[in-house]
Image 1 (tube, one colour):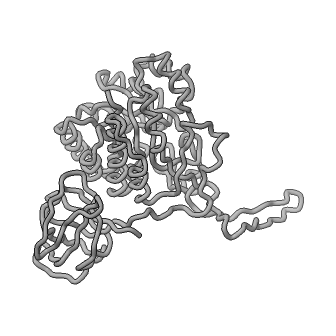
Image 2 (cartoon, rainbow, N blue to C red; image 1 turned 60 degrees about the vertical axis):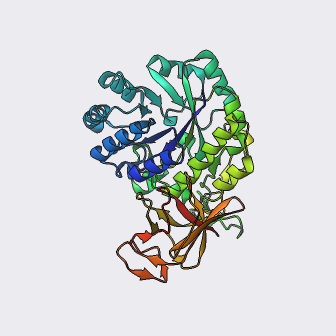
Image 3 (cartoon, rainbow, N blue to C red; image 1 turned 180 degrees about the horizontal axis):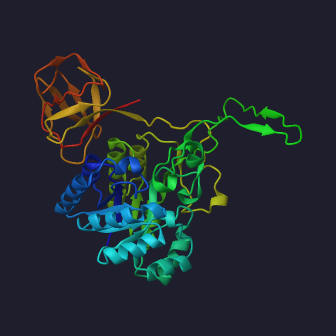
Length: 417
């Protein structure tokens, strides 16, 4: 049985994109009990219920994030939240706190529990305790190694193991950070992290005896982003991870990331997993796709090597790097029109990223063709659905622009930077 590909669903659109581009399962949540409040607000209970039904109709799975760390004042609301979501019949709850596990088991004993990476399980003793509590799957702590996970599986063969393979990394120990809480009152472990670790800082040294404060000067090329962790990218180790035979699911981080991020990352790991199982693995192709996404630089994290063996996990030069491509448009769900994300010009040529078959065409509106294995599009005419004609369309324009031919929903047009 092949490993599951699990992608982020920050809102309904991203959920549909993830499933379209090959995710076997998605994860998302509603309200404050998820560790991504911003994405949680994208869903109402009604739309989340609709999202669960949509996912199940495709024969795929959806896991609900209830992985925040609640205070006493929130427990009654949490209980009601679990009851409400349980009635929607999701495929699992992702939970971090032991008390929330017990509460979930009491309210919804038939819904599987997946243990969040926030629980920091680093050894098989802790894994055994959670397994005895009824946990079906453990999302491994970011600091645990593949060799350690093999020991988990040896001692608990029925315990499912999920590992993060891509996305943002936290400066703190498995996300247990308080910088945001100290500086802005936004508590990371309740889902409202302000990403303070991504900011630039000026450093000072203080002489405690005299009270003198010195500004610490830095060389121009070294930067001041001292907390900024590079993004995780384990694509180069996918064969080793899958070959271990002990990993049940590969997880992509990113509920607050862009629709294009969800599409491109899911697309790359879907092809990698399929390539592994069909003996047709093409690492450069998959890495090239991941490099098209905006990132903070890439690191292989700690799954394959111990933390003290790594010296390239921080990006001290900048908070965010441009990927190799800029997204210019996204095809609407009707497949007949698109919305502009960045400037589109008549006569401009754009690469096409899609998850389904593309038709060659050449008409008054535009041309679609394949060149060196890459699908491309050129627009000869820019006309909105309402009939307005443009010479160029900018990102602020919210009108739907007609396509020359039907394209799969959530197809993206992009151009090399």
